[in-house]
Length: 336
Image (cartoon, rainbow, N blue to C red; front, side, top):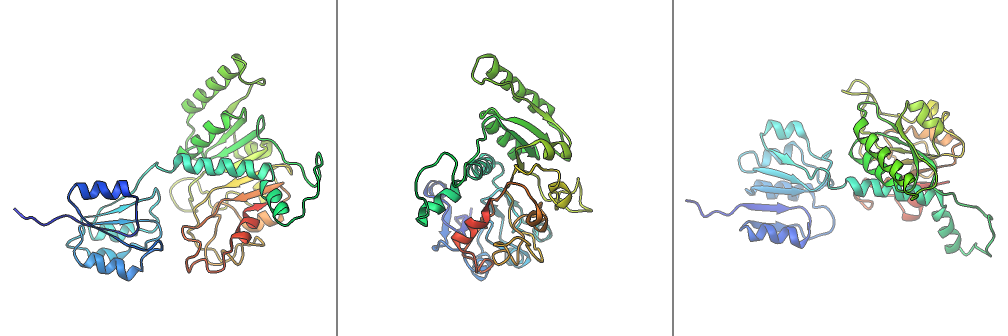
């Protein structure tokens, strides 16, 4: 019987509890020391050395070169992320090396991010902080220089009612919001009915004064009636399986939105685009489109009250984003 230990290489520190758990199982473990991503050449070298398992993140390009290096030895690639756009599935299948991901671990985190962005844009938090930081705030006034808005009791359109969309709905229902749902593929009527029951219970018991509603509507109804619109649909291009969502928000659909409405988007920035079209984003995202479901040129022309792009890339200081500056990113992310 062989005494050879199962060898694992992790491309980043994944936390002491996880690392200790692997060590307790007797695995031979090596972790890349730097906070930055290891060069691809290092990953290939480690795989070629005969490791059994490779732990990766979204910033690691795992393609044919990596899989070929471990064709006879690498047993699994374990991705610490929900997404796996960085892993070439065709190459993995060709080399017959399985890979895994940590599905659903970021569902609530993503929904919370979108929810907090909605509140931040509505209450003008970035504008207020910026004014104080630049020493432009003089004295208190009831509504000058600007007055934020509330989200309680308002109407939100949730575009996409999958796991993240449903997590967003649960949070919005606690703020007594009316909820308009739109999903181009599947309508989860059982979930919507359960949320309506909770809404009715809150109203009957006096926890909320006004009766609130949740229902599925058309995209046109959702955009035209909502105070807030939040996007939670996957990217599906023309010709792919499912209803297309690429540039779902465009000049035509933006015209349906009310002029005092807010648009919240929480995408992953991976697909290429020739131009961003939005001032403040052009230099930052000249190589990669931050909002694949939104036509940014149309946003530039729109008259809606505000738009918030939650577009932090996986590694802001990486070569793919050489010109990104924190202040510039925030100015663009909280365009009001």
